[in-house]
Image (cartoon, rainbow, N blue to C red; front, side):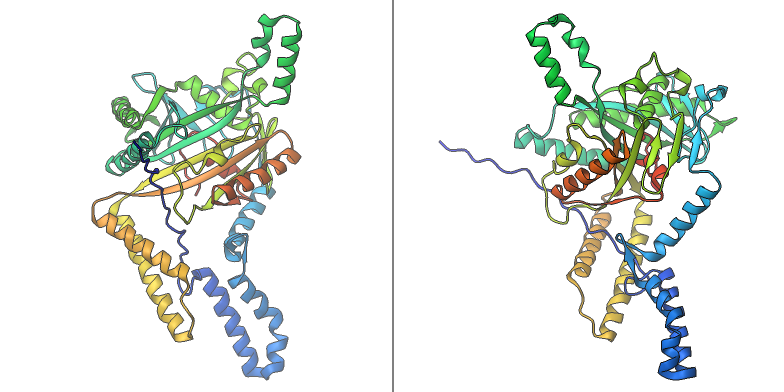
Length: 468
């Protein structure tokens, strides 16, 4: 008797959309190109070819700014980032020092990359919610676990993939859900010396201590943060009646996760939220020891300094990478294994899911289709051949529109990878290892230079925040 095993269904991602007003160029790019053409045309009209050559010092740089790309971004997209970075550096906003004398630290979070304090409230069930008054959201954090995915058989993998898809699909139907974040990170395991106490001073203890010294000890942690609409507030605090509704929403989400074989170990209380945030800045065992860190200062770093290519917080340095392009071909659902599992490397993988309304999604699709039609007409006039990538984007738009018309929800995914090290040299090596792991996962990643403070708050903190 022979048996056949069906492979797990693969997943396919749509191509990253390249929005542009005309021929893939944004409005700012077209502005620079138009100015360059006006300058060049005026020079030719006034002085002919010699005037065109003399004016090249003006129209040449303008044309380069309007068409050049650096690091996968148009040069016009770098100019606002450079201006903002210089303004923050001159005004001293790239360095922050937390004062331990402020009594408000006990019930609020003051974190780098986040404007204003975040208040901490408690629901009737004891769950802590982080209240962002500016965004009007309440964020709760859960610690989840599962029986594993890669070693499960095909039927179990298909069941879990389908159940997780239903969880994501339910987000579009929930009116109060703003954003959901899944954060998987590696932290240093508690000191292994305690496990050797019963072995004495013999040969076995020496061998085990040598092995533990050579093999980095890590523990994996998976957190799910859900951001809900705050509703009405009283004197800057959430309404108690609304907090009771938050408990109901969290229970509904926990049941949905249980259907996907994800066990919600606990919704974090205020002290656990502070420790979870603290671990994102300095995951060393000394920094997380309750006896060494006062409760009031566990939330944020004592000192943080943002550089163009990194963020330094207390005894750690961080760099954040954005998943600019997901795999373009069909991949196994466990394709992120090489990114999430890296022994000895402090790495956080964050996936943020934001549900979009059907009306907003259809408007985006119509605008993108109009841009493609205009680009196709312009290419036909210029005699240019349409690229296969353009046809692939058009096919993705048609499929997305058909799914919306059929009643499916639309979600925006943002992937952020945070690398943490003790020194800048180790951070550089860890960044190289991350790019290699991303290539194995068929993902294209870009380091978010000039905005590591904001990116770290979105990608390393379990607060379900937007990058932009």
